[in-house]
Image 1 (cartoon, rainbow, N blue to C red):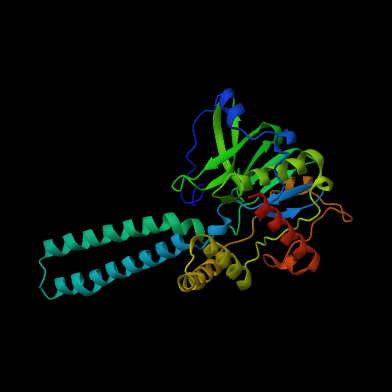
Image 2: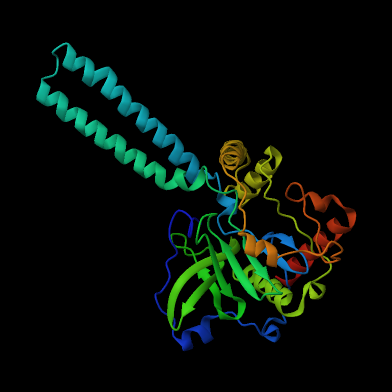
Length: 330
């Protein structure tokens, strides 16, 4: 679930041409005739020039791991500080502890405190004061893929559309969780890795996302199904944090009472995380080449909060029809 964010992707160092042919996702749409193109709530921007997808970690931001790391980190830090300032230092001052014993316990406490802070930073440091999301841009006019990492020099990974190797990747810890995984290759060697969109526990949604991207890149936005719309928002407002927390808990927590407790906790933590972060900003050269025509008829509406566009009767009917088709198929 946390692959590529808290934990690095577990990726082979090399893929032979045979492995790429057998395990890779093809650009040939004829191989996906039985797959329905769908962004599966991974799309955040679409127009005639480019589409942007969320990163794999977007849905887990401010989740259970972050809550546990924050609570445990602050709790252990508090305990260590109490031990140092309430027990050790007063014990040295009134003679209840020998100097040698006091220094020993003091050094052990400081060491544990530093270790606690380092472990907490591993999780919390990836969440707070970074970016609200890490988008992946597919520019169909320049035929380039841009993967946002940070705003500094070298903060965007760029690879030509035809040169990236895509396949269905597995999670590092939870091997049953799958995602659309992309590799930058130098011959048979993997140079860099990124994931696109949400993760799932079956392959079909990944293939739907892939077909959605391929149709857009190879045939244009006019070839996409006309019953789709953007349903994911990266807004940091409170309601959006609640909706994302509810969707997160719908997947992993089934008992209503427990679920709503965690929804409240995750909503609060996600709001704190998102409010501490800043919006990603693409470099000027990518902004320039991503210019959108003012009269672009294929620029899709973007919701203020996730799912807002589904309140439209037409969009809601289309959503219900897609759900019915999926249930019938399975």
